[in-house]
Image (tube, helix red, strand yellow):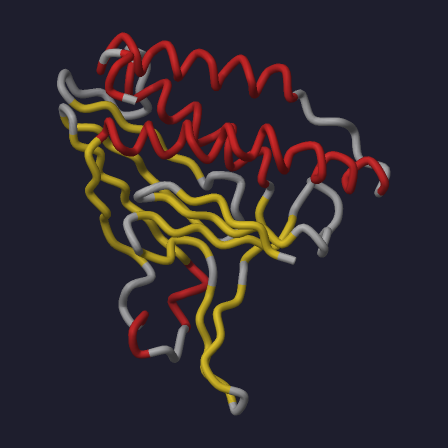
Length: 195
């Protein structure tokens, strides 16, 4: 059973009935700006099919929120330039790499979906890596929206599955704290009436 968390520009699907083991991984897809940035497409005798990759939902939302915090606030960046903030991560998703770069109010997301490189689906050929440009404001709104939905609806379900498999509990207090921090940074930058 896949659950879908969807914003205007960011969408993820997580398969809750298939725990992949140590580390908290579940099969998942991630789409940003309509691009499949985590997952695979393959055509076989049965037809065209999208296949998920392995990823840690807690880690993915933690990284997305942390990225927003950096883009909205922090003087810290992994790459230094007076007007550009950047953050490199895999979003806790196997076979994926991302560099988020904000230039003013535009966010450029450089992605490399290593699984998609070998696709035989014509619509995805050559699209395993690229750049998606989004307004920073709308990106942060989407991250807040899907993160809240994850925390309220699906984190308890995922945590129950993980604990049944002997995993240590995740620190959801910390994730909620990061969520509230990003929410406050958003209000400071864009105003509270904009959301």
